[in-house]
Structures are given as structure tokens and as C-alpha cells.
Image (cartoon, rainbow, N blue to C red; front, side, top):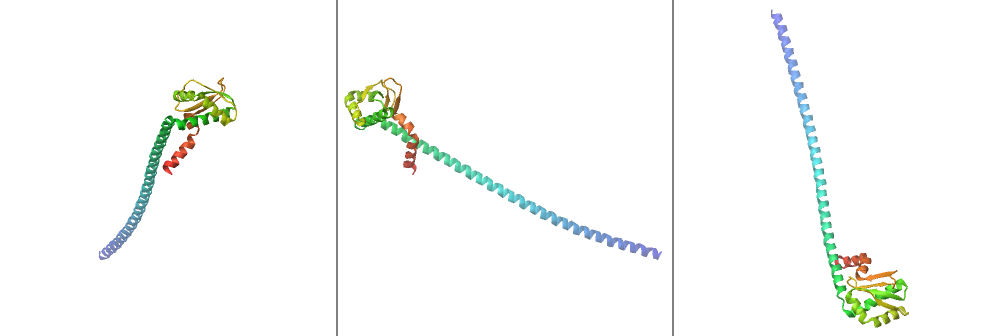
Amino acid sequence: MEGAELIIQEINREAEQKIRYILSEAQKEAEKLKEEAKKRAEAKAEWILRKAKTQAEIEKQRIIANAKLEVRKKKLAVQEELIKDVLRQLRERLASLPEGEYYPMLIDLTVEGLSELGIDEAVIRSNAKTVKLLSEKLEDFKKAVSEKLRREIEIKLGEAIDVIGGVIVEAPDGSVRVDNTFEARMERFESELRATIAKALFG
């Protein structure tokens, strides 16, 4: 019986050793897995953090870019309003030029129109105020235009039209014309006018 007990004891002892060994290995493996999981979790957390930082930076740059664009749009809108205001004031000034400044200008605009058309007879059209002024000075006006062109020019006045100033120079039969009204000239030279005004206002 003792022999059998010894064998049983030995078996139990070996079994306990194996159990302890298995438990120890299991514990080691668990620690190892835990450490690996921790590293993986840390790596993932770091990746998430980096991604979040990158996204935050992208969003920040987007917000800054949008803000800059908005500021630029508002700046351009203000500049456009200022340019329009100057053009409006220019039209008002042209509409109220004193006769001493306006009359020589009418001579030059008429000479330019006649030169472009290459005609010796013309009908001059403008607003009521200008037509009245030219009718009062018609002989003097014809003489001044003729002298500048160095040839005899015949001029008639047409009906008044709705313009702020300047003249339309037209062939008597209406076949050709040069629009030298202030509106038409401002439109033709708008880009140059805008550039000049912008430079004066904004440098």
C-alpha cells in the first residue's frame, strides 16, 4: 500500500509541477500579450492623435484661407465702390464744366470726330445745354474747327439728345458717325480710367 501511495504522491507532485509550470507559462504569455496589446494600443492612440493633429491643421489652414479670401473679397468690393464713386463724381464734374473749359473741349472733340470720318460737312448732336451754347457761338465754332483742320468745314446742329456732354459727329446723311460724348469716351477708356483711379487711390 505504501508503494502505491508513493506512486500517487509522485504523480500528484509531478502534476502540481506541471500545473505550476503551465500556470507560469500562461502568466508569462498573458503578460506578453498584455504588453503587446498595450504597445498596439499606444501605437494606435499615437496614430489617432497624429491624424487628429493633421486634420486639425488642415482645418485651421482651410479656415485661414477662407478668412483671407473673405477679407480679399471685401477689400475688392470696397475698392470697386470707391472707383465707382470717383467715376460718378467725374461724370458729375463733366456735366457741370464751366463754359471756358467746356467750349474748347467741344472744338477738340469735333475736330477729332471729323478727322476720323474724313468729311467736311457734319451734323453735331449733344444735350440741350451744349446745343444752345454751340448755336450761340456757331460761326466762331466753325471757324475754330476749320482752322484746326486747315480746311473749310460746314457744321449744322442736330436735335438735342440725352447725354451729359461731348458731341456726336455725324455725316449729313447719317451714314457714319463718331460718338465723342463723355459717356462713350468714358466707356471706351474705362479700363485706363479704372487703372488710373486705382493707382491714385490704392497705390
